[in-house]
Length: 497
Image 1: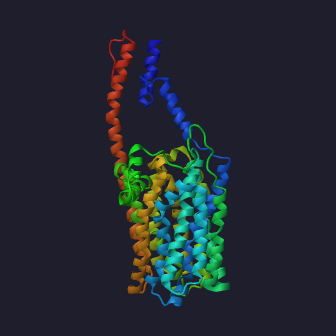
Image 2: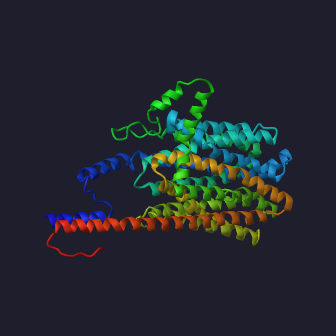
C-alpha cells in the first residue's frame, strides 16, 4: 500500500499538484477558490453579452463614422487637415484616457449606472456638437464630452462581461468584439444617409439620440448576485480600509487630498503590474506603439478615396465592407479561439494578425481604384477581426481578473497619448506633402514594427520561463524519487528521471 501511494505522489508531484504536507485540505481550498471565481457562463450572461455588443458598436465603432463628415467640417470651419483630424483624435484619446475616472465611478455606483451615465454624456455631447460655431468648440463637445461618455460606457461593459464568463471567456470576448464591427458596418451607412438628408449638423443631432441607446444597454447589466464566497457585489465596493488608510483619512488639508489621490492611483492604475509583471509591461508598450497608427486608416480612408474622385457614397461603402467582413468572420474566430489548443498561444496569434494588419496598409499605395481599396479593406478587416477578438483575452491571460479593471485603465491611459497625437501628425504629413498615400506607409511601418516587438518579446519571456521551470523541476524529481525509495526499501537502486 505504501509503495502504491508513493508512486501516486511522485506522479502528482511531477504535475506540480503533489501536496505531501497539505494533503486533501489544500486541494479542497483550491477547489473552493476556483468555485468562488467561477462566473455563470450563461443564463443572464447572454443578455449582458448582447448589451456589450451594442455598447461596443456605439462607442468603439463610432469614430470611424466621423470620416464621412471630414470634408464638411473642413469647409465649414476653414480648417486644415491637421486641425480637423483633432476631432476624432480627441474623441478616441479621451475614450481611453478616462479609464481611471471610470474605475472610480464603477467602484462607487457600479457598472450598470456608469454605463448609463456614459450613454447620457455621449448623447448630449453629439447633440451639442450640432450647434457649435468653431472647430475649438467641436473639440470640447464631440471630442471631450462624447469621448468621455464612450469611456464610461465601454470599459464597465467589458469588465462586467469578464465576470459573467470564465470558462467561455475567450468566446465571449471575441463575440463582444464583433460589436465594433457592427458599428463600423452600420454607422457609415446611417451617417451617409443622414449626411445626404440633413447635412452634418442634423446628422450629429440624430446621432446623439442614437447614442442614448447605451443607457438601455446599461440597464440590463445587473451585478452578479452576492454569495458567501463572492463577498461584496461586483465592482460595487472595494476592500475595507486599513488602519493606515483610516489614519491618513483623519488628516486635514492638502495631506488628506494628496493621500486620497495616491490611494486612488494605486488602486485604479496597475503600476504594480507594470513594474512586477514583465508580460503586462511588454504588452502595454507594444499596444501603445501600435495605437499610433492602428486607427488612423479608418479616419483617412474616406478622404483618401474622395480625393481621388470617388463618390462619397462609394467611399462610405468601403467602411461598410470593412464592418461586414468583421461581422462574418468574428463569430467563427470566437469559436476557434475558445479551443484548448489556443490556450497560452493567444498572444502569438494576436501578433501575427497585427503584422498582417500593418502590412495591408501598403496596398493603398498600389492605387486608389475601387477594386484595389476593396481588396485592402477585406485584408485589413480579416486581420482586424483577429486583433479585436483577442485584445481583451490576451490581457486577461496576462493579469489576474481581480486586477483587470486597473490594468485596463492604465493601458487605456498609455494608449490615449498615441491615439491623441496619431491623426494630427498624419494630418500634418498630408498638409505638407499633399498626398494621402504617405499616411498609409507610415501606419504600415508603425503597426508592423509593434507586432514584431510583441513576437520577439513574448518568445524571449516564454523561453526564459521554460528554462527556469526546468531548473526547478529537476530537484523536485530527485526528491520525489528519494521518497519512492523510502516507501520501497527492498529496491536497492533507482535512476533519476
